[in-house]
Length: 118
Image 1 (cartoon, helix red, strand yellow):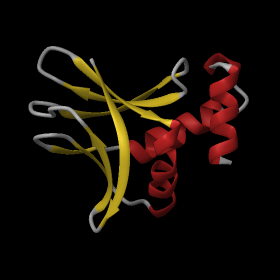
Image 2 (cartoon, rainbow, N blue to C red):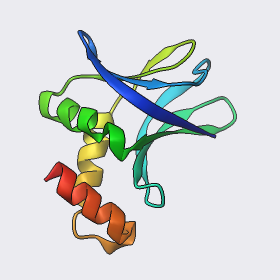
Image 3 (cartoon, helix red, strand yellow):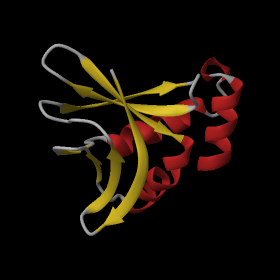
């Protein structure tokens, strides 16, 4: 299952990533992947019997970049709950470093990440 972040908002307690989904029963997994086809980052949430991928397209990378710069926490806000995306700073930093100059992620993803986060 995939959940798509559609907007972000900076609030007092950190960055809020908004989605139109139920988050009941989901927990932060502290791990991220890359969706090269969609040119997006994917944070993994864990349900009792499955993984849920929180897709973060290029349109919300500005919030991620700012959260990295300021070390502010990042939260996923759904229809019925809010989950802190624990470990997102370390995971994104690792992915950015790994993607730079690495054709395994696809040319479009490599170029987009390198240009945006340089």
